[in-house]
Length: 61
Image (cartoon, rainbow, N blue to C red; front, side, top):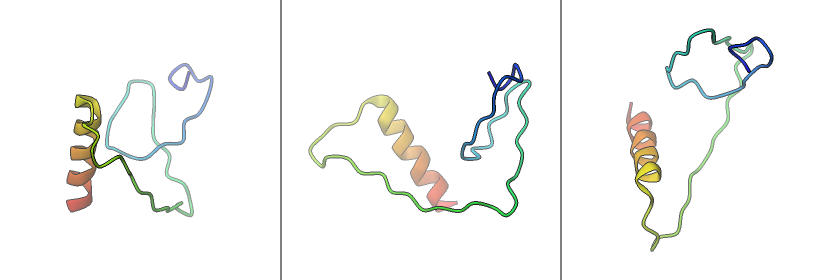
């Protein structure tokens, strides 16, 4: 919908680029904190594990 100029998307900047979509910076910037939690005994799916690794890498950058 965004690429078709039928809507807008508010999201976290991950550096990804999509055809027909351009990022717009908010002024003033909106900043927020967040946390991710999961059950200690649970084994995450491969997608969830990849997301957890991604977050860890971004946190260390």
